[in-house]
Amino acid sequence: MDFTSGDISALVFKPVVKDDLGNFSLDGHMLGVLMALDGKLTLGQVAQRAGLNMANLREAASKLHKLRLIESVDRASNTIDQDFVHFLIAELSLALGPLAEVIVEDGVEDLGYTLQNFPAQRSAELINLLAQEIQRDQKKSEFKQNMVKKIQEKGY
Image (cartoon, rainbow, N blue to C red; front, side):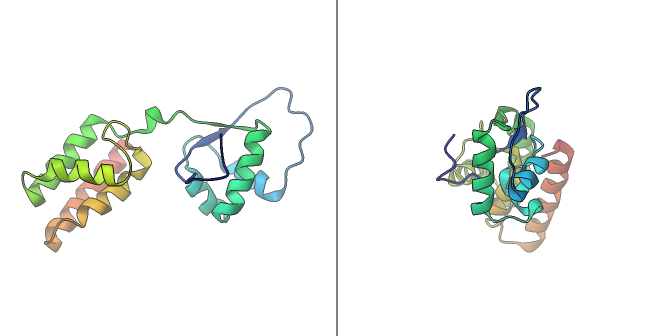
């Protein structure tokens, strides 16, 4: 895995449990990152919790990966499901009408994904992006509140 370029903030890693740990020399950043990785938090979230900037996190994660102390988590299970997509379109339709489905698809595409592979941890970002399309403040507020409840219900 290449840690030298690109956006790594949405990647998810977990520690590798080994019987033969051997002798590893870990600096404070590496130890903090290793302890914060749980297979659920993105590297961006880990950086915030560990108080690291992305450059320091990138270096620490790269070293941990080379030592085979962390591994990437399969992201397929961490995508939004069809129930969420249908609810999202229905809620946006209440505020914007029949174009809601197209607006959702465009928003997902603007963030670099499809509805089939959209990461669940970015659902709040998608909601904020879509809410910008709603002109009336009350409708915008209702949309956000209903979607936050759905995100919490889904555990995203």
